[in-house]
Amino acid sequence: MRRAAIPLAGGIARLLERWRAETDPTVRIPLLLGLGEAVAGEANEAGMAGEAGADQAGGAVDDARAVLARMLEGDDLVMWVAAVHASAEFDPDLPVRQMDRLIEVFSDIALRPRFEEAWFIPDFEGPWTREDLVGRTAWRLRHDPEAECRFAVRLVETVNLTGDSRAVPGGTGRGMADPDRTAFRGSGPAAAGWRVADQSGRRRAVSSREHPRGTGPGSGRVRRPACRPARRQRG
Image 1: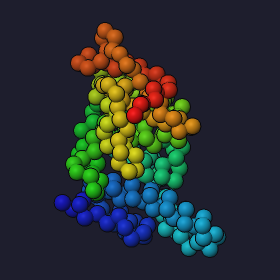
Image 2 (image 1 turned 135 degrees about the horizontal axis):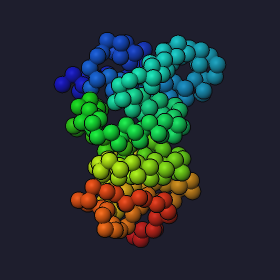
Image 3 (image 1 turned 90 degrees about the vertical axis):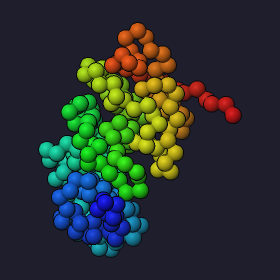
Image 4 (image 1 turned 180 degrees about the horizontal axis):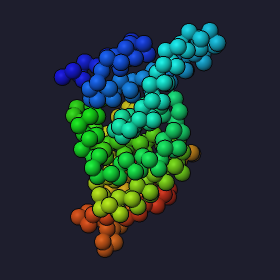
């Protein structure tokens, strides 16, 4: 497949060259994500190199930021989510500011299959689902525990209105994985599996340990989660 040979190395200039030549969304999404990582990397390197390093990288970085800005203003919602995730590499608070629209997009049942059709990442087998990306978005919010909890709570509230409980991940999908690909361990269905870390580094859970009548598996509803300290595991 062409997407298997996507060159994500070679710097921003090479990524931009490929971006301008591509129209296939399965190729454009990883290129967009690669641009976000490259911009963040250049910013770190320029910071260490001082003003001279910043001037040298400035043109390509500005072009990459312009591409991401255009995607953030576009009408293609799958590409918009990709632009949010890509831009979060150097602007971690962007998903917080865009939370309303992220919840709107992820809770749109009609958009669900479009993620699986378009979202392929090198080194990962198969497409990323909407549920993978919900989990990945929660991971993107990990630096702001209050926002991470708010995202989970509001998404559960929204999908309970639409009856689309599949939008809430079980916490063990690849979207919830740390960079070392070790997934957060879930305990129980739906929102009960969302585990995050607070500012002191302790584990806490966006958790619902029981399913009252009318909620839980098979009901089409997920109980509204509550953010609270998770029990310390023994062993």
